[in-house]
Amino acid sequence: MAKLIVRNIGPIKDVDIELKKVNVFMGPQGCGKSTLAKIISFCSWLEKDIDATGKAEIEGLVSLMMKFHKMEGYFRDDSELAYIGDNVGFFYRFPEPFPLCWKSDEYNTSHFRDEEFVFHKVQRSVNPKVIYIPAERNFVSVVPNLQKYAEQDDSLQSFVNDWFVAKRAYTEHQPLKIEMLGIEYYYSKETDIDFVIMDGQKIRLNQSSSGFQSVVPLMTLLSYLSSTIYEENKPFSPAENEQMREILSHVSSEAKGGMEQKLIDRIKGFLQGKVYTHTQFIIEEPEQNLFPNTQCDMIYHLLSCLNHGKAHRAVITTHSPYILYALNNCLLANIVRGNISKEEKDDLKVSCADVIIAPCDVGVWEIENGCMKTYGEVSVNKTIQDKEGLVRQNYFNSVMGKVMRDFNNLLMYKD
Image (cartoon, rainbow, N blue to C red):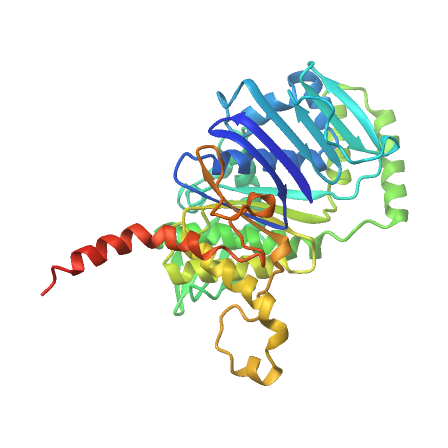
């Protein structure tokens, strides 16, 4: 997957981790969960954006990151960043020698502004679709005429653009079924209105409950970017690639510069990045406005989307222990599945029985004082997981411990 080292950026003091298929960051408000999520989102974008080095020559990559993810003031003189992914190695003010495992003949090197180094693999192995789903996602459910707002080159506008593309895939005749809430969602192109259907009753999304307004954009993007987009955008054949190159070459030779040439360049970039190998989801607080049982169902659904046939990946920031309880259930289901007979499985009443994930594909971290917290025995990769990959019981005990102590102390005075 990828290696990430972050030092002295925002509230993060020192983090050195190996990213997995599913990455979960826990911790109190302001501890740095979103800082790590934004950095991972940007570096994942570097894996796909073939024009990133051109943009960096103008502004610098860290400058682009600060603008796109609104991280002004996060970087200081002692900040250091290293990301080593599938296609790209990116180092910002990082001491040499760089921890890069690629062979020298496998990559090209770019150097910007003394403090930024980018290594590109000659043969790209992945082309991810990157989607940052923010905690404030419910605003797309309630704010009218979003498409009329002035475009901004930031993560929020990118999320809005992806929302407008995704929701058009779900119509009144082919709605999105959200079984965990017992509702269906669709977008009416004729009226430009989002609807939810519950118990046969049609309700405008902007007049529905806060839970619906939060979960519908999340579920729509999960469904569209884990499956629908890959059904719509089939890989180009070699013959199609050759035809497109010839057409674009001919059009380019006819162009006389200005806006026409800029449009051609944008079309080239669109075509080169159209066929994705997988989606990189970055999701802030999937539990937002959801009842605990529904939070668990949300994680089960998320994992089923990630296992949809592509090598999808996810970064999750959360405050909710229920998210970890649900994830732990899926990890345990994977561990014990060989011990359960078919007859027993048919009788087993477990919501996550068919939503399993290998512990080696999951990293769960708790952030404390800008570093990764461990409990007793130090974990490989600094997670809060035990040797089997399960979230440690003493983590859950620490979460509930204070509340239960207060309850037990007060219980002594109950008649």
